[in-house]
Length: 324
Image (cartoon, rainbow, N blue to C red; front, side, top):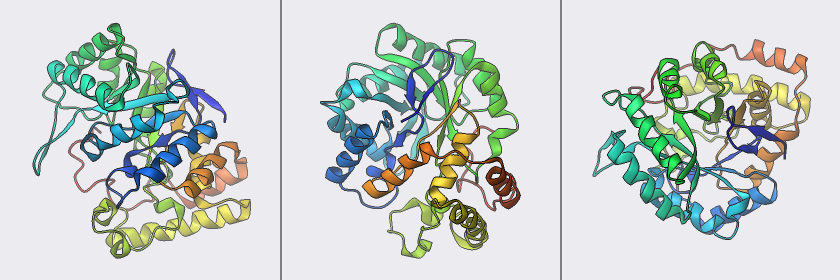
């Protein structure tokens, strides 16, 4: 597996990571035994960059990842996140220094590790100065609980303010052929600051795989039933775009998911996609994409088929937690 560096002095990670969220929640029922097998197979394939968060499964996902890596900790670059606090039927964004300290200790306990390699602010509470939050995160680095810092879904301005307090290794934001909004300002700012982009949902929550069933056939607890780009009329329009991608993939002898991942990888050595899966077959299909180098003709064909503004619908039903 090829390697990439997160930030100016961040960790070296596999060019492709593994998002673990769906193993515990959001995309229908999971199977912990199979999920652990997926994590172990990822490590065997050289995928060492594992991504979780304290809110996934209300802590259950961190516990799952912790069990999976218990005997293989030295093979893993472990990333987790704080900031999304879930209560009974409601959620809030918490970025206070006091909350950050407590959240880190709780994550360390659930994961069963003595340090977190990359610790992200999952979402930003605009009422808390980002300098205060990053200052508290920097204290965790000084204490040895955290090695590197990251932010998720923040604006270019917030990224600059945070970087003035402590080096930021990575910005985790949605990025794919179907999610290009950060190309105008946020990605250039990250590059100016030496911050890597960790691209989540690089296959657009399965939409770019070309194999996603109609939303009414998805499990009742699958959040994609309500995702604007997947459900309803917008979903039908975007599925037509996927058909264009499939033609290019077929001509290249690869799957549409592999083409989508190869496109993200081709956008720069400072970008690391973290496709999520809880199935061994999809893991191995995704891993093979790291060895695919797209030609200029293929990239041009994708640019013509999927212009940056071609996709219909917002990324989430409620975009209020996302900094533009």
